[in-house]
Image 1 (cartoon, each protein chain N blue to C red):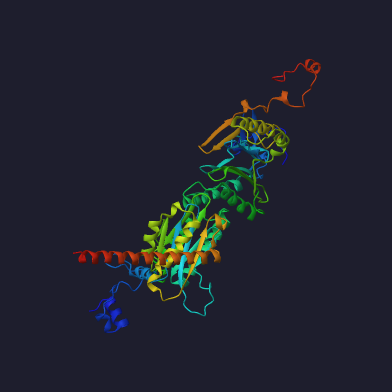
Image 2: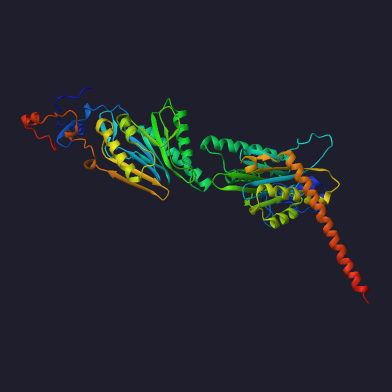
Length: 288
Length: 265
């Protein structure tokens, strides 16, 4: 007298299937099933795939928009720059991906196709909002059908339009797409979000913000200090000729060096203030 | 077929349809050549002035020698601030305008703001260019958008797309090119532009047999769109006013000798 779900569990997982109850407990075998609590577990698992991946972040500034990501160096023998995460979709739109990278690269191809067909039909370059909407719809399509799985990646689309100015959109595996002034995804997203909020990048120029971007990315990486990593940053601003461009290597090196210095100084300042606090406490007890 | 000199009335019921009473004349429907496609022979014109763009057109739609519609509207809406003027085969141009309206409507909802005039012109161009061997359509697309302001794009028969500040089209445009070249100036006021357009379209309607009727004008600015028409009795060159025709005798002596009332001279 077993229901289909239990029979499936026994077939796939054997006797263990009834002993080990996973979080989804039977409602997570495909993306077209809703659980009794109203969740789609496959989409949540896709979001988990992005939670532990490289940090990506973006900031809207007074005169442009910035994108950045930290990449863990997987192998010493890899050619630097071949594991690309930041791509140009059109002249004035850039995208950065995190999570399952092959999924992300497929989405970037799709974005390029959408932009090209929009330009062909309407004669104007696609705007960031329209592209983000279309990519979000495309990602959402994979969360409704039985024969597909969701894309396991978060993307940030940065754009600079004539009409609306600089814009950022963050899309997650469920197909949700929102516009932001500053956003982050990946492992260090909490730290990054706090820092971006404190910064208030809307009042700074891109040049000033680029330093802060490097600093935040270095900060997000602090937990894994032992692993080597690389930064990939890009901007769309007057310094880049109003075109989406990777940060020039010399500028990036200089910014990173300054960022590391500043972080070390801040860390020292933190330690010193801790010591001072402790000293004060000791003095309190020995004053008599 | 050449028309008969005297129409032959028939009393049979089935032949009644062949008779049409039109004013003082009895038209024999059989003698009319129905095989000509319905065309907007036309005079169409658009001018950018200081603050907006004004579109003007005559109102005659012909099919061979028959005027199908003497008060037709050749100004088609595409979007709130984008309009197009049609010339060429009516069926072709109406269809192209309808499809353009559909695509620009979709673009407007996607962008959630006024779509650019350039996109409307591009869509019209893509139809005229890709189907040029099947179509006979020349259109002018004009409008206002927040980024580039008032714009006019002409798309003639072959499918080129040209942006201009003054555009004329249709069979009647040839008759007013001299006048337009002489009297157009950039940055006119609305009144100057209106007078200029009424005068030039009148001149074209006066000479071109495929243009006539009334002048329809449409004014597009940032704040709105307004329509008007100039009826036949208000035209500067009245089409039945022989006194303005250069075929007239020009000497007073000859007039008195004739003793004919030429109306208004």
